[in-house]
Image (tube, rainbow, N blue to C red; front, top):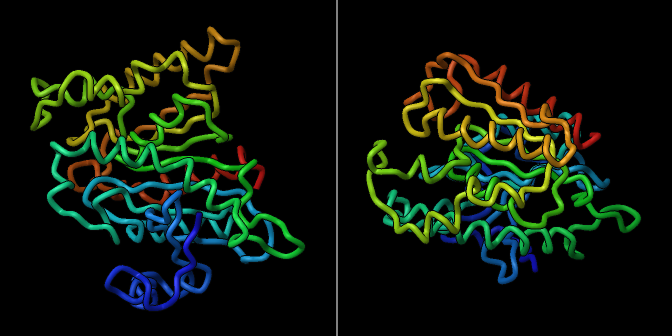
Length: 288
C-alpha cells in the first residue's frame, strides 16, 4: 500500500521544504511517498525518468541519520540508470523519535525495519508506480538492497530469509552482531541473548541465499570495527563455496584510513572512490 504525497502531507513539513534539502539536479527527479502495509514508511524515491522501468536499489541509512543524507549517491545512481528507494529507519527522519535512536533501542529499530521491507516492495508493485504502457517504474526483478551501518545490518538480516533481491551492497556495517554488541568489546549496552540471536546474520548464515555482495569499510572504523564485518564475510564465502556458488561473489573492499569522522560516517577523502565502486557494482549486477 502506498500513500501518494501532496505538498502538505509530509509530517509537519511540506514536501517542497523537505525536497529543498536536495541539490536541484536531483530534486526534479525525486518524489516523497509513504510505503508499506500501513503506509508507515517514509521514502525518498529517485528515478531517472519516471516513465520507464528501471532497476532499483532499496537503501537504508545509519543510526541518527535520515534518508536525505546521501544525495550524491542517489544522483550518481539515477545518472547510471538505477532508481533508488531510500527509507527512513524507524524513529528517524519523518518519523523522528530521538530517544529510540539511542544504542539500547538499536535491536528494536532493526527488527521493525526488517519487518517493513516486504511491505515496501509490495507498495512499489502497486498502481501508484506505473509508467508508460503500464510498466512498473521500479523493476522488482532487478532489485538490490543495501545500507550504511544500521541500514546495512537490516539488509544483511533480511537476506537471511527468502527474498527477491539480485545483489546487495553495504557500507560500514556488521554481519556478526554477537561480536559487535558484546559490551566487553566496547558496545555501550548489553542486549538480551534472545534479542541478539533473532537479529544476528552470523547465526542465520546457513539460510543466506547467495547473491553478489559488496561491502565497503575502513580498517580503523571506530564505531563498527572491521572484525565484525570480516568474520561474517569470511564465513559467508565458505558458505557460498559449500553450496557451489563463487566465493568471490562476496567482496570486501577496505581502506587503511579514510579521514571520515570516527572512520565511520562516510568515507572522507576516498568518498568518490567508494561511490564509484558502489555504482559500478550495481550497474553490473542489475544490468542497468
